[in-house]
Length: 104
Image (cartoon, rainbow, N blue to C red; front, side, top):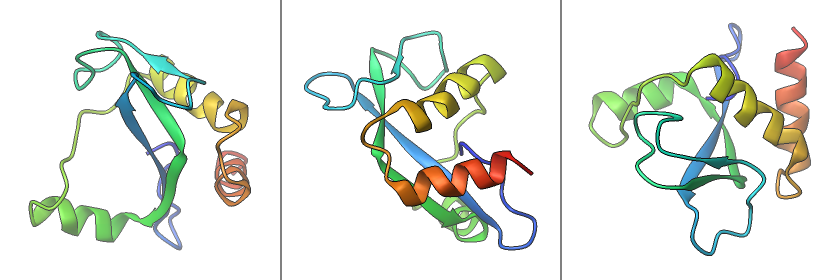
């Protein structure tokens, strides 16, 4: 999650991390050590960012349909959040949502 869940709507923004090879979006590159999940050079693909209901996400994790991972360190999270505005692949809807959430 790049935003905390909104207390009223329960919505949050998610980004995906993918292997670096042949990735179009190289705005932010994560390396082993940046997060326990990162085993090789990876990139955040902002074009796949989603706004989701955290209750649905929690239900999918509970049902085994999605995997929960460790939280990012604050510096890594800040780097990924900064990439939301820096990436040319971030859709305007995602950028507006994130900026709104961060301004609260």
